[in-house]
Image (cartoon, rainbow, N blue to C red; front, side, top):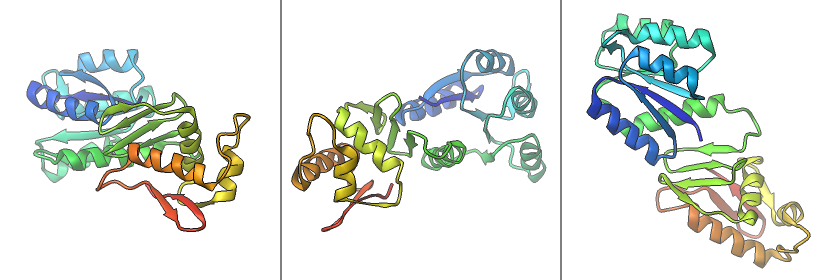
Length: 222
């Protein structure tokens, strides 16, 4: 699970952001001061920081520079300070983005997704967007923030799709790659049943991930 550190001294906003991130499948750590944030940052494996500028014991710019000196971690500012010079200082301190309040939670989640995807190495077994999160190394799947059970067969299928994102996988290739000693995939019909069952878990009216190229095979389009 990717851990996000929220540094925000407004307790209601801190809680609101944290709830939305947890629902999206992130691990969440909260701090309301630089001092507390530094303690958490050293102790926990933080993947990204959401950072206010105005904090009780200093400015967020200070924490950003300190954190970047410890190790490379993406930082996104969330602040009411909307002057051009404030944003420029935010970027100069090393931040990936500078978001002014009020902001859309959906847009924030998409920004997190974009930043974390960019930092995810090729061939990674992790996929995440605003609807779906998969950590296939741990065989964990979250749909709209709720953990969903996956079978070993489905995990193998998802690994195959993620390692070939955007590429058409023919029936023959999938049958060959997914074949195991248990003989679970014997023909295209059995493959189709398993793919359809997986799609029912992942997809809804607004989120489509697997495309059936009729007569040829399947493609991950997420």
